[in-house]
Image (cartoon, rainbow, N blue to C red; front, side, top):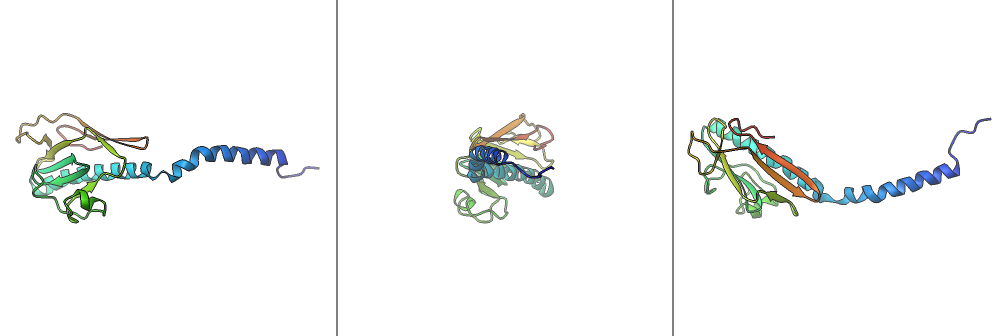
Length: 165
């Protein structure tokens, strides 16, 4: 006659395996920095795409400023004329206390490399270095790496087309 079910040995082995796996898996669930890094990476990529689309839609240059612990979108290189959009609460302090500036602060423990990068999209959506004058662009492939809590994400902007991926 067949007995269906688990033996005591099988039950104990499964509990031991679950215990060992939880030693490695549970700390990752409670480490929010990895999720913050990924979320900021996605938001920064979306902001760069938004800058390109805004430049095309409004037929004027839009500057992207990765520096000072933030990413900011402006209509000039000095950010005296910011692109308007709602921001989250942590961004307010890093963005001159403006709640309507398209600007986002870096999460805690997230590092950007290269540390400071300013470029702009012209009215055709083509990327330029901040010192370039349209139509002569010296912009080359730009890879911005975000690192935090063992998670790395790279935002790449292609020359000529401005494709962001």
